[in-house]
Amino acid sequence: GTMAAMSPMSGNHRSLQVLRTERITPRMARVTLGGAELVGYPEFGPDQRIKLFLPVEGQDRPAMPRASSGGPVWPPGLARPVIRSYTVRRFDADAGELDVDFVLHTERGPAAEWAARAKPGDWVGISEPGGRYAPDPSARAHLVIGDESALPAITTVLAALAGFQGPVEVYLEVADAAEEQPLPTTGATRLHWLHRGDQPPGRPLVDELTAEGLPADVPAEHCQAWLGAESTAVRDIRAHLIDEHGLSRRRVYATGYWRAR
Image (cartoon, rainbow, N blue to C red; front, side, top):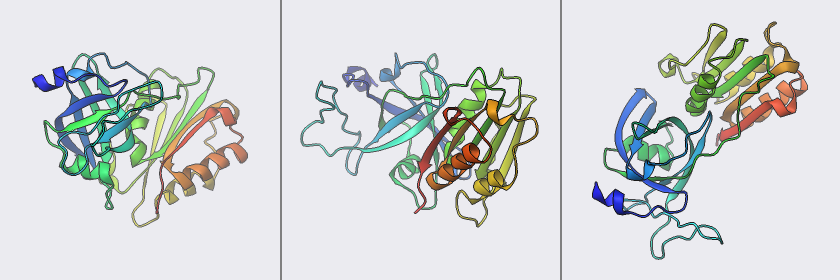
């Protein structure tokens, strides 16, 4: 509405509204954001992280910081928002839409709670996007490894590899078959869906990736890996790829997305 157009841009942070929501799998909600302040949002490549600013109890919209030379300045007297990091699933500047996908865990954190209840018109803040991953043009094979929390990022990574001719091995751990999603693939992409069932998070990924060598057509010394999942699993798999399989440290891009309690 007109309010959005009038609200001043606060540094690199923007206040947006929910346009629509959809449940894309039983445990994954997609929230589509838009509004006047999305105009001029920077275009970007794969695996872009943003901070989400969520209103706290009793607020219609989150308090947003103002950029200053000394760092962010928060409006006095207002409770600060809950801040969580997420990956942009899709950004369409022409349509004025930005999608964020949320895993609705059984023990929901504040962001998943917000996403489960979000409805059109709800306010949320976002930061500018940031990310350091880019496909290495010298790589002859790619490993892409993650769990459902990394699926939005993995989708963008695979889209960035659409023109790549060599093998792309994708290992994805999800709760069960209902959580599998269609992904952008090439003729040389092999998708390995691992179903967690009753196992601890990360166990299926670690077991699969430490069980045997890499596929014969994946040359370890010329392979780039992208890895995002539960923190301990990421640490173990990263070490295994480097120490046991001989991947170059600088070609393994690994992020602990969350930590199992």
